Length: 178
Image 1 (cartoon, one colour):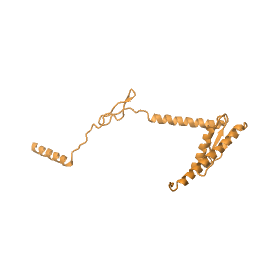
Image 2 (cartoon, rainbow, N blue to C red):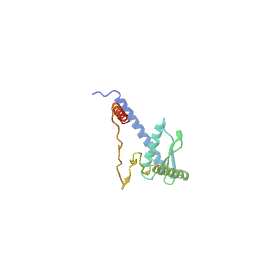
Image 3 (cartoon, rainbow, N blue to C red):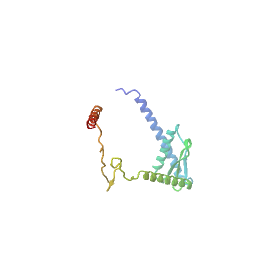
């Protein structure tokens, strides 16, 4: 049976990509083992690798994954730098500089404040009635939503001819009473 055209090419590209990924992960793991054995070093920077931003981001992600899964001593991996110079630095326990920890705490505080602001923006509003006397927001009583009346104002479904006939009849009736 013949394969679809291009299938072999796709399979070979996928195998090549898998081999590159495994080789990169093996290299990162070897560097982490060497770093783990060196008691004098507290940080291990990984230079940006990749042709484009997407590939660099994927490599940063893989470095963090391998560092997180490293057996033994727990490492802390952080992405630092800006744009093209963005890279991962792996720290041993207690090796993270104080200024980086302070920046992380500030960022966490800002994120929590933004979350609280967003929650406050979505807090339940007071109930009000529209021009037809119908509540516009659902009222929560005991945790369950109560029902609001919908479609209380019926639509006029008469045709224009029917409306004109009724208007003519009303004019005739007024003319007779005058």
